[in-house]
Image 1 (cartoon, rainbow, N blue to C red):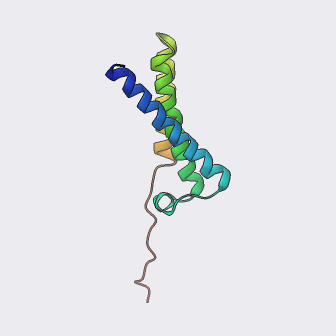
Image 2: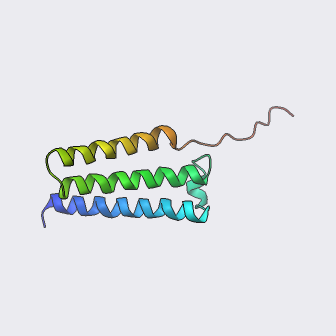
Length: 102
């Protein structure tokens, strides 16, 4: 196994793990406190991880299964998914309650 194949396998495994983590959060409606802390809610955290995982899986599939225009199209789709995740569901710190009113 060469370095390129190993990198694709690792990327695919990470993408699958992220996608499954996102699906699990969507289905159960719960997420680890360390994850939810950086997002407005569980749904946003779940979709962020799901979209990133699917994008990684698409990149790996495009590199291994498809060639030419099909490979380029899957890469463009993967980049679009990452763009949606970053713009729509990006991590945001929750604002601490303002104690200056007292």
